[in-house]
Structures are given as C-alpha cells and as structure tokens.
Image (cartoon, rainbow, N blue to C red; front, top):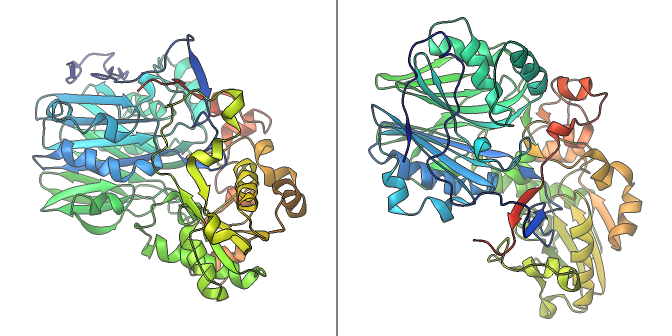
Length: 528
C-alpha cells in the first residue's frame, strides 16, 4: 500500500500532485469484450436523472474510516459509479478508491485497516464531467507546501473549462478530467500563505454549485456555495464532528443532527473546536428543488423539511391539480411511492402496489442480446395482475426524462389487464439540462424539450398524462407560489432559469462542450 505524505517545501511544491489510489478493485477494461452502458445494459436507469455525488467526513473518532464507509453506504443513492475514502493518522494520508458501490469495496476489514487515523473523508460518485478513470475517483489528493490536502466535491463548476485553460497556460498540469481538480490547482497557485485563505481565494474564482468536504493534516473543512444549491449538514457523534450530504448518513452511524451548513458558509473543524466563517458574497439561496422531488433519500431532512412528507404533499398537490377517473392509485416504485400515497389520500382513491420492484437487479449479470433486450424493464418492475386487472389505474411517478421507460411501464400495466392507464407526474416537465451536479442528458434527449404534453401522451401511449405545475411544486415545499423574478429555489431543469452564468456553455455557443458531456460508463459485461 502506498501513502501520501506532505510534499517538500520547494518552489514547485504548490503544483498539486494527484496521488494514485492504493488499490482499485474494478477498473474500466480495454476494448475487448466491452459493453457501453448508460447505467445498465438494459437501459433500466436511462429514464431517471442521476445525482452526481455524495460527501462525508469524520473528525476525531478512532473508527473514522469505518464510520465514513457507513456514511457513504447511506449516501449510495447519490452515486454508484465509484467510491473513495482518504484518512489521516497523524503522520500520513491513506487512500482507498474503488470503482463500484460501497458495499462491494468497503465492507472488508482489511480495507478499513488500510485507512488508519481518527479523521477521514469520503465520496460516492456518478460522473457528470470526467469519465470512469482511476484519477477521477474522489476524494482527490494533492501535496502542497504546507502538507497534504484531500477534497470531496458534490456539484459542478460551470466555469471549469475556462479556469482550466487559464491554469494550463500558467503551467498547471492536470492529471484527471474531473472539474474538482480545478479547485486543487487554484488552491495551489493562490498567493495566500494560510490554507484556509487559499481555499477561500480558490472558491471565489469558481462558479456553479459546490458542497465540499476537505481534509488537511490539521483540519476538516466543509464549504457550501453562496446559493446553497447542493445540501451539506453538520452532525455530532459523541463529540466528533460529522459532515455529510444528507441526514440519513448521520442516522446510520447514530450521530446527532446539529444543523445545515448554510449557503456561503465555511465550517472549520480542528481539535480545538468548530469555527464558522462566511467569506463569500451573500446571495439569496437557490437550493435545488429536485432534491425534494427525487435526489434526496426520503428519510432525510433537508432544510428543515422531511423529504418523505414533502413528497406526500407533492402528490396531494398533484391530485388537486390533475384528478383522474380511476379505481386505483399505483406508484412507479420506488421513487414514485410517497407522491402516490399523497395523491391517493387527497383524491380518496385506494392505493395499492400494482407494480412490484425487483431490488436485486445487478448491473452486469447477463449480456443483453437483441432477442431479450426488449424485456429490460421487466427485470426491475413486474406488474401485479391480481391488483391491476380490470381496473382504471393512475400511475404516479416522480419525473419523466426520456420517456422510454414510462412507455414500457404503461404497456406492462396494460398487458396485466388494466382497463385504463392514466399517468400523473409529481414534478413539472423536465425540459432543460442541469449544470449543477446532475447527470442530465443533452436537452435534445429530454422528451419534454421536443414534445408537448399531448405529444408525450401519444408517445407513452397512456390514456391521459398530466404534470404538476411549477407553482404546485412550490406550494408543496411551503411557498405560496414561485417568485418569477428571483425564484426561491433552483428550478432550472423545469424553467431554464439558471441561477449562475454558464461560462463554459456560453463560450461554446450555447452547446454543451464535449468535455462536459456525460461519459458512457464502460464495464465488462459479466465482470464482478
């Protein structure tokens, strides 16, 4: 095993050196036997948006690495491509970064034993920028003149390419394709002496969304962008401070929720205690409203609101806006379930599980030949004929992205004998790409960007299709309506009202640059 120690104090030591991971259990293979995937060989995940990342950190606990692994497990819904942990034992930094899910890589005692120390940070990843390369697995690590530094990032930097070009002209050498590396180079080239000041200097240069958990030899630091687009919370476990993307990661380790890290806040954790700074320009917060719709785990509390209850209220608003003549309300599991419960309660229509989800679908257990590829959706969902036959059914789902999975589910319900199938979507049409840490297809691939609701209804082959209005969504999260001048949330995926400049996009004439397009995840079919 290799460890990374502090870089020597030389004139070149401010150029960050990204350390290779100590071990990687599954890497993208060469071209032989390769299958290009967009999440699953049967396309089961193609009709959902994917959150990019989850972050977690522990300071001052003897089981720091094991707790971090548990926290990342609770945040697995935020990224399944890769996971990593960096720890510090008082002398050296230790790294473990692996492709695949947390449970496949961080449950062995031997792995945790290679991560000694009383402080650690971790990251789960679903790439939005940068492909499945070992060097892209976070936390990223660099050796600075003052010692080692690791960073885990949830979000996206919207001026990353512009900053990278500037840094490269000044001599910086990039070793990954992750926008997070831009942060390391900005810290390395800052003229400030103190690490905290260099971090502040770097973050004042970037635009977009960022919730960061960082680790140096002396500190753990949590930062949230001034708009607060992505979540970050502070917890406590028997006196040990915890940072995490969501409260569900505190629950799994028995930690107490202290508070949200505020938009524009920097939380600095040392053995002496916790310091809070607000070094960034104060802006009206624009938290991502889609966290309530889909991204956050339903048992998390976000911005003081329980996600599960918000989703039920979303379903109730949907029922008030778009009632359907039906005998039964059926969720598209699992993400549509809370909204379907709220819809059924508000509509006075019975709720039942007319679609059963298989929770044990692997990603590469079988090579999908053309002859069986059409079965794809049935691997994950199966219609419950005893419940559906002869019924007028309202299907409730959280969103529609491409529409392909929705059409297959509707057909599956019809094949099970449903007399009518109506679809109700617990969010407005997703018609614009996200540039703040979500793996959104190019706009042209979003069905709502090129079809009216009536055209989508025909495409999906459903008796009726209705979406929740944008004001209905805002009512569900406690607002009277959406403020058209300065919206209370980031809702750009629905409205196109982006809260920051999209520097890299604008520089490319409004087209998504190749470097920002989501890479296809390449895995060997059948390889564990």
